[in-house]
Amino acid sequence: MPTVLITGASSGIGRATALALAQRGWRVLAGVRREADGRALRQAAGPAVEPVLLDVTNPAHVRAAAEAVDRWTGAAGLQGLVNNAGIAAAGPVELVPEAVWRHQLEVNVVGVVAVTRALLPALRRGRGRLVLMGSVAGLVALPFMGPYAASKFALEALADALRIELAPWRIQVCLIEPAAVATPIWARSVEVARRSLLPPPPDAAPVYQAAVAAMTRVAERNARRGLAPEVVAEAVVHALTARRPRSRYLVAPPGHARQIRLLRWLPTGLRDRLVGATVQRLLARSRTAPTGAKAVEPTEPGSG
Ligand SMILES: NC(=O)c1ccc[n+]([C@@H]2O[C@H](COP(=O)([O-])OP(=O)(O)OC[C@H]3O[C@@H](n4cnc5c(N)ncnc54)[C@H](OP(=O)(O)O)[C@@H]3O)[C@@H](O)[C@H]2O)c1
Image (tube, rainbow, N blue to C red; front, side, top):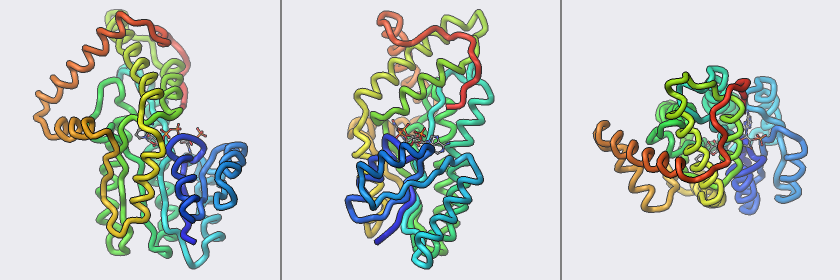
């Protein structure tokens, strides 16, 4: 029975991936941060899922997870590692406190590196595959999503480096790049912004307040109308099981995937004008429609 470890399996894409792999006969070590989440997942997925307490920013958890993998898999090692755990900090670059920037990069980038490094010996033993959960935000950075986009651009670079570094052991590295997916990440992101964004300088307040309101509308829409997490789970299954997995899986509705590919290759000036025009449309709409967004107000930095 092949074994996979998935980080961030309590909800959304991680949970859907755990269920999909368990159904296909994998033993799933499911990273969760609360025991109750582990129990709920096991109840839904059955005994093939083994919850592991794993906050990717906690070195003791990462060490313990690697030891648990060694105990469970022994010489057979690990056939898959899915670095899925992630958070999304959003807001105008000027208003996102440094503590939030640090936490964003700590979870989405350093956490991925820490878990990968700890589990590479088991992956080598098991001739396993490494999956990183990137995003279209790692291909085209949208304004007011700077911290999140920076973290996902970093994963693009990490995947490029690891693909070649791990080639001697034939460890395949696959990066999943989903567009908006309907998961709790959006509501969580809005909540972190609400708690943590700094007060704007007075002369910038109208611009930034409109931007935060528009951002909130987009998040609310994505939470309702994004792709189903199961669609992304299927891409992960392909990455782990296909005879010839792809290096990158852009998971998006066809029109959106074409837009992303085009934007990526356009000259910067033209790309900025197109993205800027979209943002202006969103801002115009948010000036006329009510949202759940509050004006940017001074609060304590949050961590997500
Ligand atoms: N939803 C989208 O539109 C979308 C699009 C592209 C890529 N992605 C990526 O997909 C991945 C999963 O996100 P999702 O959309 O499924 O959101 P989600 O439902 O909020 O899931 C995020 C998962 O990460 C876990 N997590 C957060 N901080 C963690 C930490 N420090 N250590 C370990 N686990 C942690 C969460 O655990 P708790 O429940 O304990 O907080 C949760 O299980 C993320 O990397 C995200 O960037 C999402």
